Image 1 (cartoon, one colour):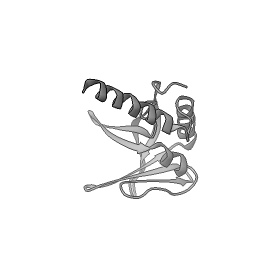
Image 2: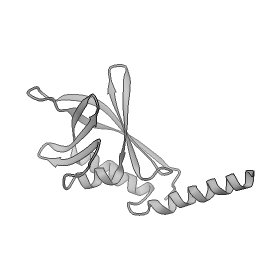
Image 3: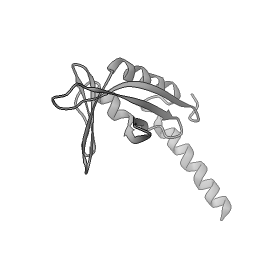
Image 4: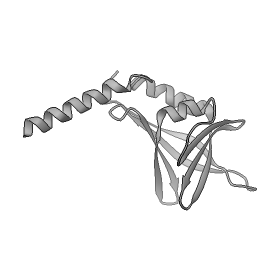
Length: 136
Protein backbone atom coordinates (compact mmCIF):
# COMPACT_ATOMS: atom_id res chain seq x y z
CA UNK A 1 0.00 0.00 0.00
CA UNK A 2 1.42 3.32 -1.04
CA UNK A 3 0.30 6.57 0.52
CA UNK A 4 1.16 8.31 -2.76
CA UNK A 5 -1.56 6.54 -4.76
CA UNK A 6 -4.79 8.27 -5.69
CA UNK A 7 -8.23 7.24 -6.90
CA UNK A 8 -10.83 9.16 -8.90
CA UNK A 9 -14.25 7.92 -9.93
CA UNK A 10 -17.57 9.23 -11.21
CA UNK A 11 -20.63 8.41 -9.09
CA UNK A 12 -24.34 8.36 -9.83
CA UNK A 13 -25.71 11.15 -7.66
CA UNK A 14 -29.16 12.71 -7.59
CA UNK A 15 -30.05 16.16 -6.28
CA UNK A 16 -33.15 15.71 -4.14
CA UNK A 17 -35.59 18.59 -4.54
CA UNK A 18 -38.77 18.89 -2.45
CA UNK A 19 -41.93 18.10 -4.43
CA UNK A 20 -39.93 17.68 -7.67
CA UNK A 21 -38.28 14.74 -9.41
CA UNK A 22 -34.67 14.20 -8.36
CA UNK A 23 -32.10 15.61 -10.78
CA UNK A 24 -28.92 13.78 -11.84
CA UNK A 25 -25.72 15.67 -11.00
CA UNK A 26 -22.41 14.70 -12.57
CA UNK A 27 -20.19 14.01 -9.57
CA UNK A 28 -16.56 12.98 -9.23
CA UNK A 29 -15.12 11.56 -6.04
CA UNK A 30 -11.41 11.50 -5.33
CA UNK A 31 -9.17 10.02 -2.67
CA UNK A 32 -5.44 10.54 -2.20
CA UNK A 33 -3.24 8.39 -0.01
CA UNK A 34 -1.22 11.41 1.11
CA UNK A 35 -4.41 12.92 2.61
CA UNK A 36 -5.96 9.71 3.93
CA UNK A 37 -8.70 11.09 6.15
CA UNK A 38 -10.81 12.75 3.47
CA UNK A 39 -12.69 12.21 0.24
CA UNK A 40 -13.20 15.10 -2.18
CA UNK A 41 -16.53 15.28 -3.99
CA UNK A 42 -16.93 17.63 -6.95
CA UNK A 43 -20.51 18.31 -8.04
CA UNK A 44 -20.70 19.75 -11.53
CA UNK A 45 -23.11 22.66 -11.90
CA UNK A 46 -23.38 24.18 -15.39
CA UNK A 47 -19.81 25.12 -16.36
CA UNK A 48 -18.08 24.82 -12.98
CA UNK A 49 -17.67 22.36 -10.14
CA UNK A 50 -18.52 22.77 -6.49
CA UNK A 51 -15.98 20.89 -4.36
CA UNK A 52 -16.58 19.54 -0.87
CA UNK A 53 -14.06 17.74 1.31
CA UNK A 54 -15.71 15.12 3.51
CA UNK A 55 -14.26 12.81 6.15
CA UNK A 56 -13.91 9.30 4.73
CA UNK A 57 -15.14 7.79 8.02
CA UNK A 58 -18.28 9.93 7.83
CA UNK A 59 -19.15 8.36 4.47
CA UNK A 60 -18.37 4.85 5.75
CA UNK A 61 -20.45 5.29 8.89
CA UNK A 62 -23.27 7.07 7.03
CA UNK A 63 -23.98 3.95 5.02
CA UNK A 64 -25.08 2.25 8.27
CA UNK A 65 -26.58 5.03 10.43
CA UNK A 66 -27.13 8.78 10.48
CA UNK A 67 -23.92 10.70 11.25
CA UNK A 68 -22.56 14.19 11.05
CA UNK A 69 -22.86 17.52 12.66
CA UNK A 70 -22.17 20.96 11.37
CA UNK A 71 -22.14 21.32 7.60
CA UNK A 72 -22.17 17.66 6.55
CA UNK A 73 -24.71 14.95 7.39
CA UNK A 74 -24.81 11.42 5.94
CA UNK A 75 -27.50 8.80 6.47
CA UNK A 76 -28.76 5.56 4.98
CA UNK A 77 -32.05 5.78 3.10
CA UNK A 78 -34.22 3.42 1.09
CA UNK A 79 -32.96 4.90 -2.19
CA UNK A 80 -29.26 5.06 -1.27
CA UNK A 81 -27.08 7.12 1.01
CA UNK A 82 -28.27 10.66 1.58
CA UNK A 83 -25.74 13.45 1.88
CA UNK A 84 -26.83 16.84 3.18
CA UNK A 85 -24.48 19.77 2.74
CA UNK A 86 -25.37 22.90 4.69
CA UNK A 87 -24.15 26.37 3.70
CA UNK A 88 -25.22 29.85 4.80
CA UNK A 89 -27.17 30.01 1.51
CA UNK A 90 -29.13 26.80 2.07
CA UNK A 91 -28.90 23.04 2.05
CA UNK A 92 -28.10 20.71 -0.84
CA UNK A 93 -29.60 17.23 -0.47
CA UNK A 94 -28.08 14.41 -2.55
CA UNK A 95 -28.86 10.70 -2.91
CA UNK A 96 -25.88 8.47 -3.74
CA UNK A 97 -26.06 4.87 -4.94
CA UNK A 98 -24.95 2.84 -1.91
CA UNK A 99 -23.28 0.10 -3.96
CA UNK A 100 -21.17 2.58 -5.94
CA UNK A 101 -20.21 4.44 -2.77
CA UNK A 102 -19.28 1.20 -0.97
CA UNK A 103 -17.17 0.08 -3.95
CA UNK A 104 -15.34 3.42 -4.06
CA UNK A 105 -14.69 3.43 -0.32
CA UNK A 106 -13.49 -0.18 -0.52
CA UNK A 107 -10.99 0.88 -3.18
CA UNK A 108 -9.71 3.63 -0.87
CA UNK A 109 -8.83 0.89 1.61
CA UNK A 110 -6.47 -0.56 -1.01
CA UNK A 111 -4.54 2.73 -0.82
CA UNK A 112 -4.69 3.36 2.94
CA UNK A 113 -6.63 0.91 5.07
CA UNK A 114 -9.30 2.33 7.32
CA UNK A 115 -7.73 2.77 10.74
CA UNK A 116 -4.20 2.98 9.26
CA UNK A 117 -4.21 6.70 8.48
CA UNK A 118 -1.97 7.74 11.40
CA UNK A 119 1.31 6.26 10.07
CA UNK A 120 0.78 8.10 6.75
CA UNK A 121 0.14 11.37 8.56
CA UNK A 122 3.07 10.77 10.95
CA UNK A 123 5.43 10.07 8.01
CA UNK A 124 4.37 13.30 6.30
CA UNK A 125 4.83 15.27 9.53
CA UNK A 126 8.27 13.74 10.14
CA UNK A 127 9.33 14.52 6.56
CA UNK A 128 8.04 18.11 6.81
CA UNK A 129 9.80 18.71 10.15
CA UNK A 130 13.06 17.28 8.78
CA UNK A 131 12.84 19.60 5.78
CA UNK A 132 12.11 22.62 8.00
CA UNK A 133 14.91 21.81 10.44
CA UNK A 134 17.33 21.05 7.61
CA UNK A 135 16.60 24.42 6.04
CA UNK A 136 17.17 26.29 9.29
